[in-house]
Length: 176
Image (cartoon, rainbow, N blue to C red; front, side):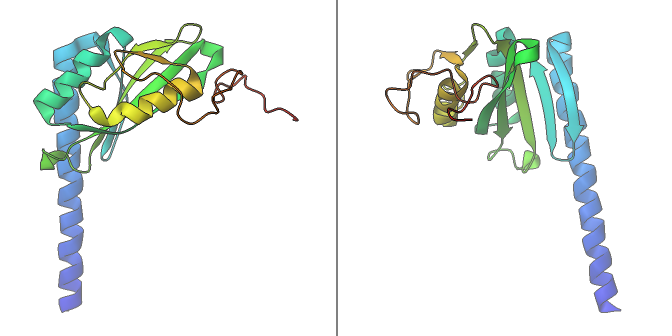
């Protein structure tokens, strides 16, 4: 009987956490869309994770808004994906919060797409210093130049690398 009571309490706690997560998610998305309107597109909303897409011109402003108004105080990671058919490279920042415990473990994926033929994006290093190596890796592996980043330079590939960035879809491994 005591075991059933404990199990019911745990189930109720999980349901409350899920409900709170959904309410926070809805509140966050409503706040962002109210503030930015059509400049922001909700890509998906899941438990503890939402992805929003912004234009490169709105990336810094949106990141500042998330940090200053909602407590998303760090980038857990940043990555890029090559979309050659669309002639674009997508950059994703995975933002989290240590300072606003309501949002832990919630992640906002802040995304933007840049032109593949001249891939440039504003850096978020002045907002989230933790992106330093993530942006450098994206620069090196996909060729995205981050405006305002102090070190768009190699740190993983050999100094004499002369091929296209290796995470581009049209990169071919020699010998294959």
